[in-house]
Length: 414
Image 1 (cartoon, rainbow, N blue to C red):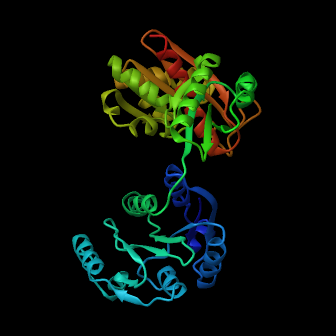
Image 2 (tube, helix red, strand yellow):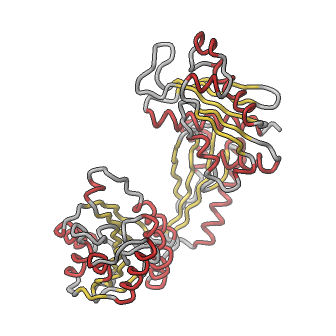
Image 3 (tube, rainbow, N blue to C red):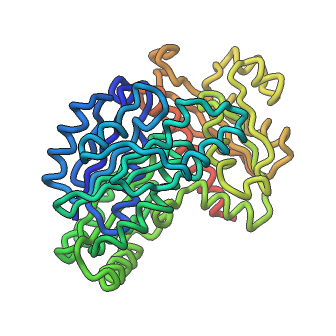
């Protein structure tokens, strides 16, 4: 079974906002055995919505739209869908009262525009939105398909997918099994990894499909099976990954959402150790990776974004003369930043980065992308330099991943 996901909004087409809804909806649908045929973004145009619906319903049994359900005149999705399905808009008292109470709690007046949120096509099944003022709508087509309209606000869409859409789709259709399992590897380049596991890959059963998904310093290996017996396919995928463990035992992080920072989180928590972070070019990216995990307060003591040279000296105790002599981007400064963070945070371990994230500031000796990083441990300080690319966001991401790897390598030794 196939589905098409359509996002509606000029703000997406002009790049004003980033569309995350299609990726989330795709994960929900794939999880219940529905394959995504297309992901589309279209503008706030009645003609575009109608033409896109007409075309995609020829190839997909399920079409999901997000966006265009607000109270203002430029939100035309609901009106277009009512016209498309030959229905009139009718006031839904239950949804109207929900909108009124929700706005009252927010201290917003319930005006005619808000009341219009409860004007819904008579032919649709209303999908109650507990978290917002725009209900979702479910339409059955004459050919046995389904058109679903959801609000564009991501957290509202997420709740509707979980509470309303997925249960109804599972009840409405007999869905095949689609199995995905992803192993996370680290510390090995994609090309080297492919060469090392080539024989294993070639021996995979025909119904299993392998995908390489590289990211900074990690490669995800995803095995997928479509339209198969779910239980037997899952067992075979687990068996194949067990075989892979014997080939690259030192490079496996874990599965699905596993990360190196999660492994560090587990080690520090289990052993009762403390961590501090000092960042210059990464600007807090590393600290955010740890503090995003529940329970980080057990080990994460402090994070210092010492962007200026004065901050490096005043807060972390980096010798100003060393900054003048070697430069802020140097082994000497990286080491002192890590040691200073460990001292200030009163921790067992600390990590530090100092580099040139660009686009300017580079030189022949230290081009853009040069990053010195260090790990201070209870017994020593380790430092290394990496060139992390030329794009600013790429440099920040890679430098963060590299120094986290460096910390993990030290923690594995204890």
